[in-house]
Length: 415
Image: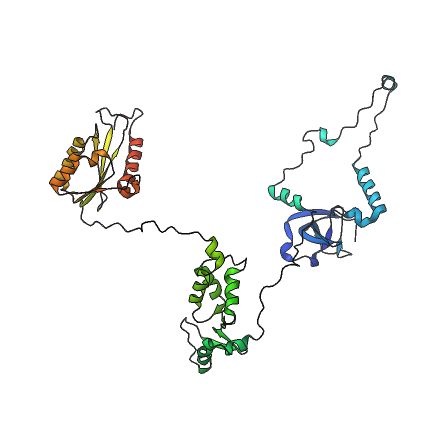
């Protein structure tokens, strides 16, 4: 039924699914007797003359008809016909016209002045701007009344045939003969922990109806693999995910091997998958140092703000076994100054077997090499432009600078 006096379409509650009813957004409905009530709403797809429209309708417990179409229907004029549409448009236009009753005086008539129109509500405070709408309301109003496109599925055809004689295919498969023997002999325990059962002449893995897996014969396995990996909604996922997808519903002997072979030989995956570069050196674990100060690492922090004593640099030394840090302030970072700090450290903790440094010239100089030879120390170097090799001391450098930043005064010279 069409009701041009209703601004909102209405529908019986029994015709709307319970999950689609929105009790949070109710609308005020006034009947012809003047009674008003708050009723829930719903967003439904309504088909009118073969075309679908998205409408926000009110829900009523009792209606004389299954649904009443109101003025919110976009094709209401077409439904009413040419005469009915003209009358409807005239009634809508007349309802929006503000009639002016201003009086024209004789002086205004002589001067040719026109009377001022009546003031409308939009000229007062607030104008025509109503309550602010949320983003969800703007989104819903944008699509209310718009046709819903219907997908054309005429050209889509099912590219597989579901076998009708599945029980016969299972019994004729030689790879499943031993599984049938286990199911009928009572010794039906499988290697994967389940039991084999036969229901309606069809072999399953598992006894529970909701968790059992269908045993697939060899003639149907390419079809199942194609559905789990190749079809568009399968997504050409990897071997593990394809196996998990199949394993939730199906089973057959050598299933994991077949999934591996199918995924590796998939033409689409071979053409589009990323190629892993084989020229990268394999990663290896760092040796675990158990003796304190057997291996130490050192680095230079600076230049910093010159302190009151004239220091601008810090020599940071970390032990790889205990993570114990040492810091020596330096006025310069020449090799003799660094060796002097190392001698102070060696006099307290002993001579290490290995010293890890970066490629700085003060660490690779001839004097430093002679020190290593005299004391029997093996000098280790990091990869150029790769400070992650000496990550222990590099991380402590950051910690030390954060500590100094919070400790020093505004001048930065009292560290």
